[in-house]
Amino acid sequence: MSTPSGPNWTLENTKVDVKIKLSALWIATMLCYIYGDYFELYVPGKLHSMIDGKMLPLGPVTQGMLIGTSTMMATQALMAFFSLVAPPALNRWLNVVFGLVSGLIVAMVITQGGWMFYKLLGVVEIALLMTLVRLAWTWPRCSLSLETSR
Image (cartoon, rainbow, N blue to C red; front, side):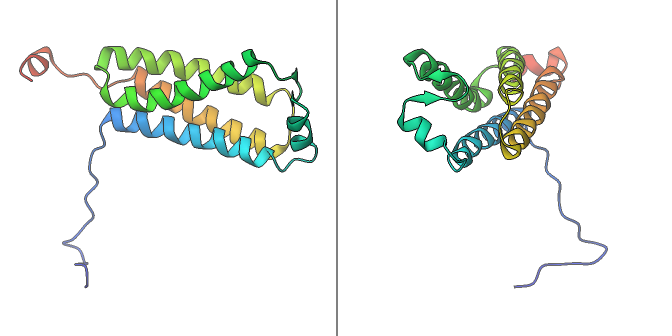
């Protein structure tokens, strides 16, 4: 099957809704987070410290540490969903607040040291989160007459 080509045929660049962009940014951030933790298992000594119940450089693993980590992951997963379904005003503020908080947490984690791949993924996560915050902050506006007619 051939596709039309030439000067009369161009690919359509469809507009993507801001909610879908925000959701995709949360998913991309979460994937970087997960892959960073997965690749970290290949760092010499990491599995041994996990078996010993230690989370380097923090020390012995506690339920509080695991709840904190789980909360961060659950927040990202929930924000991927809420970005699609929450009303715009609430959606905007949830994305700004949780995007900034998540970015600060990632920045604190990557400044603790670690291998370069982990820092690289952390920088990518921060860039994605700051893009997300900017997109939410500059959420497109519509006139009041358009909004009330929907």
